[in-house]
Amino acid sequence: MKPILALAVSAVLGLSGCAGAGSFGAGGKTVTIAMVSNSQMQDAIALSGAFERENPGTKLKFVSLSENEARAKITASVATGGGEFDVVMISNYETPQWAHNGWLVNLSDYARRTPGYDEADFIPTLRESLSYQGDMYAVPFYGESSFLMYRKDLFEQAGLRLPEEPTWSQVADAAAKLDDPVSGRSGICLRGKPGWGESLAPLNTVINTFGGRWFDEDWHAQLTSPEVERAVQFYVDLVRAHGEPGAATSGFGECATQLSQGNTAMWYDATSAVSVLEDPESSKVVGKIGYALAPIEQKPNSGWLYTWSLGIPKASHKQDQAWQFISWMTGKPYLRMVGEQLGWPRVPPGSRLSTYQIPEYRAASKAYGPLTLSSIEGVDPAHSTTKPVPYTGVQFLTIPEFQDLGTRVSQQISAAVAGQISVRDALEQSQQYAEVVGRSYRESQ
Image (cartoon, rainbow, N blue to C red):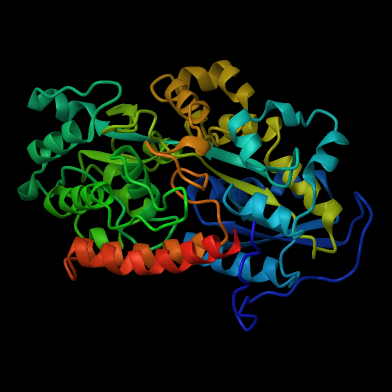
């Protein structure tokens, strides 16, 4: 892999780390954790007092950031060895690349020395995606694939049915029939917000199942191919005709609100969304949601593979204390604590196999738990498309350049969703971006 191009060294990070090394379990340390501000992470912050009581002298300082902001600040800090953060929330996109670059601490070394941690309990596809040369360099807090969430009651009222693995044509037909602007309800919610981890996450699965790909086997860009254009045109047309208001600025959080508050009939997104949808404290549609596999066109098993995970930057001077916190937040006792104190639907899903054997969780998640697990286990990042490709990854390409390339392309797609440019114009500009990346790989062969 090529090294990630470092972000500007002048990036303002807003925090400074504490210097000084400490031994395992030593007190008087503040561990600074950079996290994405999703609901499961907010639960961890709310429960973190239990960790501090169990580890007197160690204080936790959380930096909770939006998804796009977190990616930028964490990347800038880790790539430049800034040392601002002792624990960083990263994904299976960054982890193997950063491990290759020597930016992360080997967590398998810690896991093997921690009684009861059980590294082998992590779902194999996630464990592999977070590994480099056989060892894990981040451990999953939660894992996800993607599936379709829909209002069972609305489908029944309209006399509509969805198979367990619907096609995108079936989804589009249902969205048209359930779209009800008079009552303020859209037919479907789809991300249109710029960001390689925002709108491109669902859109890339659509491109894959429609037979598209970003590059051919020789790294020639393919974003203006008929397959990609048909997939993107379908996605943009669907969200513009029957999607949520303000789709061009809607991401995961906005769509979660739309469905949980009864303002849309369907949502295609992450399997982890159930923590919001099935929580009586935040959702008006508990018990009314049906779940189906990621919609397909040509290629089956079109769901993505993603995990928000915790890693330790090599620049941290408090690696032992950082691991203490990570092992607490990703361990089996934490999952049970969430279920018992906050409710079983709020347990971080898709990380450990043993979670799906907890009787209380199995009962609470019977509508979505087995589907979540089978979706995650069925993903094959090495064969995400119908045609051969030189990269791995489903909703992202596991190459360093994708962080910038994907963001640029997503900005073009978002403009098309907003009606500012045509899909063809968006893809022609995107093709130019991709050709620059492809050329660098051809020249290095």
